[in-house]
Image (cartoon, rainbow, N blue to C red):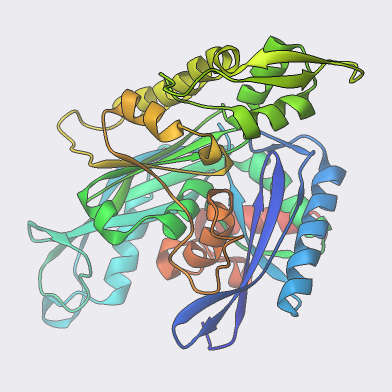
Length: 406
């Protein structure tokens, strides 16, 4: 990326749509502008109302452009949902360079070889992320170019998505007057903004608790070994509170933000607070212990579902050192304690911290995905670029998608 060139990310969530604009400088990327708008046309990563989603994208992008003082035409788009799946695969090729020296085309060929997997007709490969390379049996190689050997292997983490679900998201972006520079599975974007290289090497679980979904990414040895989405998030807590306290969803959200707690055992004295009734004409008193009895079981359920998803797909001898929680759900008081109780690991809250230009308002867990999109999006071979309509399976999806308007 040339110095001064801008890059934009678009996080279309269940509760909010967020746009981030950054520019490259002397010390790397710097945030120029950020804008957000309420989302009412998305549910658990899937478009449910095309026009509402378009309006949210337009509003968020306009606010980010106004703050940044620039206009953007291309964005990296975050995608999530139950339709996203991942697997690990290995590719093997013979080295073709002179004197058996690995060259860049060899690396591309071996990554392409790792993409040969059984794939349903309605699915597309979104990412093929190299974890490490092996040359003539020597594993753990991070950059094989220039090394000597006859046999090059790569272990990759492959992320796939439902073609129709992704096409609907891209259609909304297009109707909002933007072009898609690339798409990114959201927990990978969040990890780029919140995780340190040391954490990824030792072993870390990232949980991005959004409104409709909880995204999972597990890193070991510096690379991602598992990623997934489970269809539960902060909104299910709000719904439980609304039902349990016989109040509106808006009032339940307010109660959750102010009084909600994921603490299994509360040391503080039980307090009472007023909650509006369904008709909004009166209030009733509720205690913090009553609220905790509603919230804690659901919080534990979310973490147990996430843990079960990970345990089913990670080798039992795999050592993990930490859990990092990000997303809007990370604001729930005591959520680290609940996660530590389920996972049996140290837990911290992840906020965007690996990019310049962040104000205190942006250095919040709910902006991790949007900020991460501008960091993860432009990463060369590890990302599906769409310049010149792209290449490979995602390029074919884009070619088909753009033909709708051509």
